[in-house]
Length: 189
Image 1 (spheres, rainbow, N blue to C red):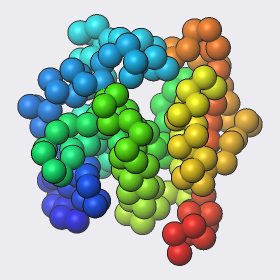
Image 2 (cartoon, rainbow, N blue to C red):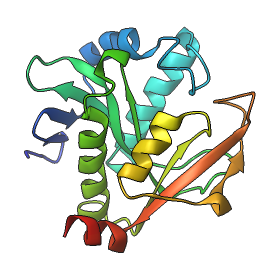
Image 3 (cartoon, rainbow, N blue to C red):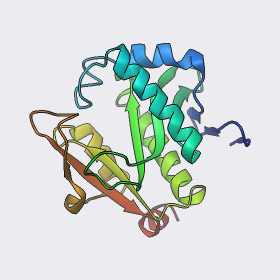
């Protein structure tokens, strides 16, 4: 792991979570702004939505010191997507809580990259950023996403679910999982 005051860079066995570079955006959008990847994220984004998402990601880093970082594969430098931390900002959701999230391109699915990156992000949430609890959001239909949340040791929090049609208009409820610092410590300790 190498970090400086101006740049974030964190390595796992196969991956690098790091600050965004301008040259990351084209391969990120090319790999992740597809029908399959965006199925549970509101559908393929047009240029206006892509630019707004970029500005949000850069803003989280600037305002909080963390974001959904660029996710780079060590072997070849490929941008696989993103993974990281932000403060929940969805209307009706658990506002201000630390949130872990990920989005990987389809050819990176099923290889353990999301779990590896999310595990690193959870370590960072509790050890570096001082979170007492971390949430993760998805929709009921996204079984791969909430399945990973469960494999990470997160627990379903129906009390935090909220109405939002942005991601799945057919089932406009965001479901929430969470993990406490103590539960994470018991898993990794």
